Image 1 (tube, rainbow, N blue to C red):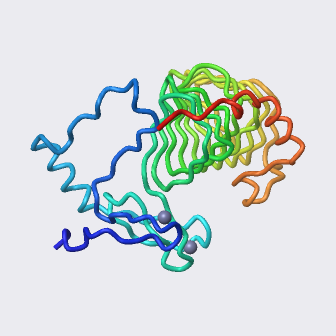
Image 2 (image 1 turned 90 degrees about the vertical axis):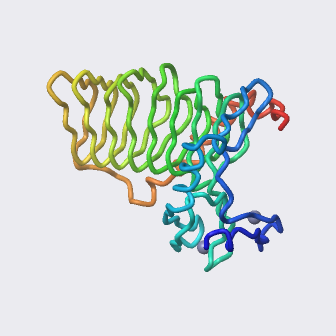
Length: 260
Ligand SMILES: [Zn+2]
Ligand SMILES: [Zn+2]
């Protein structure tokens, strides 16, 4: 019986209690100007959805020791059975200025009014519809935004959506990147696909690139000479480059945190 497991447990790392089978809330980072969340449990559909959430489970990997474990789809956090690291499983929706770090196996939605300046954001999937100035590392990043992206993106899979029109200031790292909209910027990837009606302007270093009929690519291309190890894909360029970004974003760092 699933409810038998719904008792809350104590986190061995931070002492906070957590409920492994609690319905998974979207963490509200700033609730003041937001409409109340729809009452998911009030309708039959909502109840059904909650029920299915509790039935589904997923496998998450520890941030530290990489050990995998199975968690309930409704859990909001867990503890690594090997090294006791606290693993956040919540989804985050950024609807205003935000500069604290995020490390979750859940998803991050940077909405149109959001302005994400955190020096470190690590998550499963990221949907970028707002301003990204910080560093994002995730499994799948979907960019649906028009404008400049001063932040750094590294992901296994990046999709520049059909309506996107972005200029990336920092080199973008990916295993695979799909350009369906417009993008300018430098890319290091295993493979790059420019779809029909997609447009990519900038230098690319990749093992392979394919430009579909109707797609456009202009820039320098270095094929098969990717000078990075697998580990480098997951972050960190030269510290000098890092320092210069930080100094130019001092205004973002100095801004007071939103009251929560
Ligand atoms: Zn904890
Ligand atoms: Zn671990």
